[in-house]
Amino acid sequence: MQPSETELMLRGYGLTTAEFFYRLPDYRHVLNSFVWQDYDLAPDYPRLFRFIEFWQERIEGPLHSVRFTHRRMIGRGEWRHVVREFRLH
Image (spheres, rainbow, N blue to C red):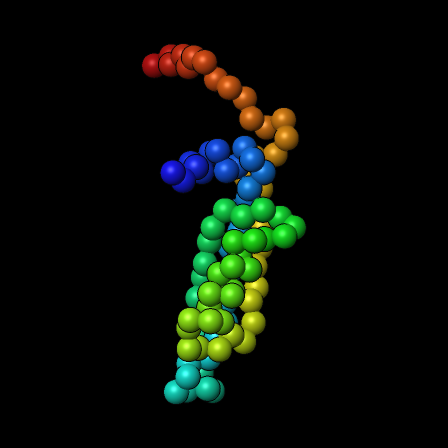
């Protein structure tokens, strides 16, 4: 069973967004891009590197470059357990 996004964030995972630049096998002069997102652990980024390995093994378009960013969604001390909510109107 896959953990929920909230569980991943509480374990220290953050949202990693990567933009892959690659060339088409038949048109080497054309540079394309593909955007990938997943929750990953910094600074090792195991899911990102697993996807790059998958790309290199299974996809015909050779990678030109990869640009990525990482953002932790919940930091230490930012999580609060809310028991009740009061609405005024």
